[in-house]
Image (cartoon, rainbow, N blue to C red; front, side):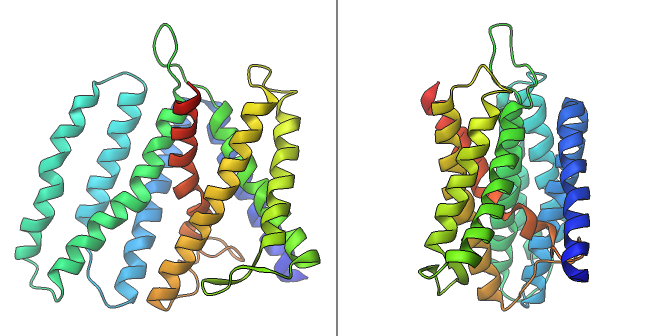
Length: 273
């Protein structure tokens, strides 16, 4: 009971902090998610180091931070998209940097450094383009899609847990995550669709159909993101990615669903546009 209370309190603080930063404005949103992207990437590198590998931690964090920062500035139309080309030398510099490290498994170290950027930094960077949808007079900050994204993920997690505990009999992906069930996934879809219906009373510019499709895409991609992180941790022989919050594990554990849901919802919205 004490563990459940601790988990609930920290989960509430986390949700309020995240939501508050998104609602206040573009700079609080960007500052928080820049910080989160760097710390989540650092956790990924820490997992690799615990497994005996040697990714280029600080160069990887520097490149990841720059990619996120450039993404924010491009999304807000402060700088042109071609500035991303200036980051290419930094990516190739990881190969040169490895020459001077004298570490075992250099190819693996380079691969894990770049994989962390692809797996963590790019999905976080895509959030900037979800927060600045194109308008007639240029991009303008809007928290609608970002708030909806997190609400759908949180609703899905809650629904999947409740339905899974009560009705879960058929394993979804037992080899990777023994506790997940098809019934839990269905419960996640149902609760996310309920949230989508409630959001139509707040966000009148979005139809129930579009919000419903968003909810389903986010639940499915978020579940796959969760399974992917479980696969990574299982392959490395590690249970939790870190100890960021009592009862919640690490930051990577908190954002594993977002890492796949973010690009999925971006491409879905591009399709509808």
